[in-house]
Image (cartoon, rainbow, N blue to C red; front, side, top):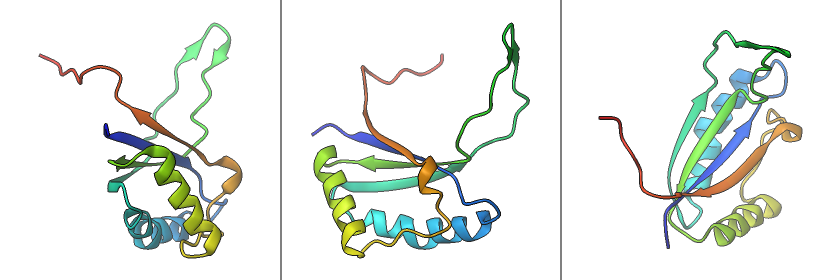
Length: 118
């Protein structure tokens, strides 16, 4: 099985970023790492930059403030099934500080070799 990356884009409920980040780092990441096939996790926060303008006007900023990247060694469908099963059973709790209306996620498998700058 080829390694894949599971990207989860998310936002906190307005005004709840501190609680959201505490839950994500202290509870959610450890819970996700218990799912068979998930071998590593790294979180990112959106870096503020001045967005460029185009002929049609300003480029809109990204829709998400947070990104979690999980390294997955298992079959993506099985990993997702286990993850959803744990959420559904209550074994993995989702925080009310997570804005579920904005979550976007997907598994990504490498397309060709990794390239590096010379």
